[in-house]
Image (cartoon, rainbow, N blue to C red; front, side, top):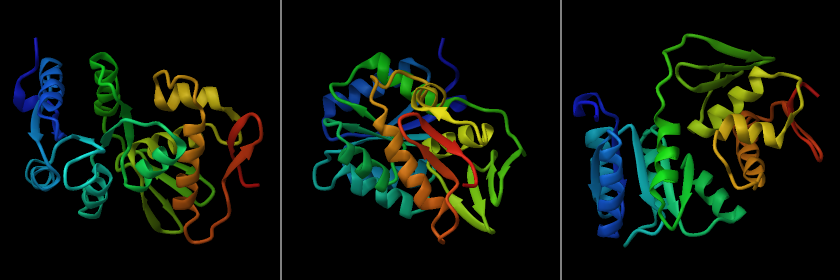
Length: 230
């Protein structure tokens, strides 16, 4: 039985293809989520501002405006909820574009109900509120706000960047393999393509080293990554 709507996470689906939008919306409702559907970018942005959904699902290919541009506008407006992109291609360039636009993750077409809902549940899992902070050198990660701080500079992170940094900071000076990172941060089968980690590490480094700070996330060639001072 689905939980009452007023206790259900609200998901905004922004999709030009009306049949696909209704399919996604129906799957979400059957899984206990409240859904809102928008068929173009302008109405999607309006509804994101009005309803403050817990998660936004947006097709990269929207009529009139790309889903990437919509993600950029969402982040520029201060929206911090997870954003999932529906994409037809999966290349490193696509992943980089996804991150640059501020999306947290993506789901490849053709749409598959079970795999999509697994990804949604991953992003909407509720963690108990925490006042805990993780510290490594001059880097601080606040677990309740999901923000990092370095030299009193506040760093906004996407959910996946937060999870990745949290995992690294929970295992300081320990070399973590790509397989360990995929299993513990993504939590689902990424079809063995670990170069998605390189993309996220790159953008995480750009954020936490924005003011020329010393590198903390070190590459261990052929193995993975380690959080250490040098």
